[in-house]
Image 1 (spheres, rainbow, N blue to C red):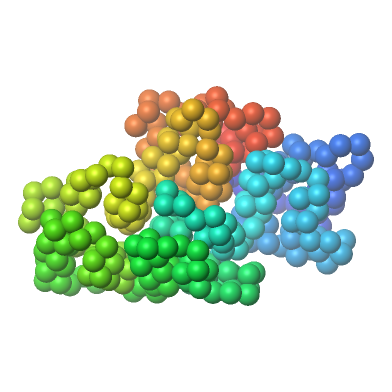
Image 2 (tube, rainbow, N blue to C red):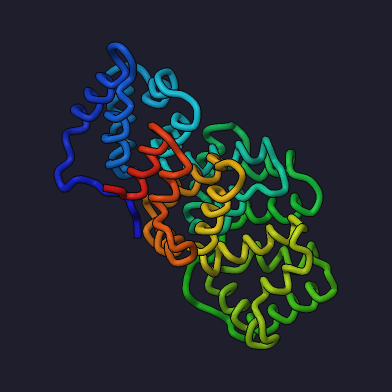
Length: 314
């Protein structure tokens, strides 16, 4: 499901580092060389490159990259080069500090990752920023969003397949009752969404549809302009159909008056090693245009090149 392509034979890590060092030297930076190496190495290989580079040259690779490249291309390269947990920590910190109701990075990290990945992101956040993720979310997010997001990012859900069908039936009724009363930030809604396993939530959402003849997200569209309702829908879609959720994020990032590079970069760098191939298929089905073509139309130069490489374009 990943779009990342790694050569069958990988050069020794010291050779990759020497090539990267050469890319930074001389007259101008060799951006194509940077892209050709880093976008064809998996997380473990990139970690080894960073370690060898620092040990050999006495300088962090991320610092060297930041000194040589800039703007949206720099952000894409840095996010990609980070370990997945470090990347999530960086994205979470950026969103928490600049919180606005339409933000989705915290929801994605809390709901589209496995419990172990969320836990690793929280550990990376603590190491990187010397604070807890939930501490910063509580400090910067306000109102009902704080009430919802703090327990979401604090959760450590059961990750197995077991499901309690009677519980799913009863909690579907609870969700329907609260939504019918427009008590969208009720403690019971937040408790269910923030604590139940993915398998249990899927059973609950299926029971909701069986009992009330339509999906739960249909009832959460009562006010399309309500960002809290949009956040609840995003949470549910991250659990039920992450490929369609991320397809929509990309579609909106590419479809406005200007390209939303932050959303586009976030999705491509976080999903390239996970399920970006499935997201590409969803995009093609929904828009009748290959995602690579849409990205190439809305981006340019080195930024375009790194995104297309991560999309698996030849």
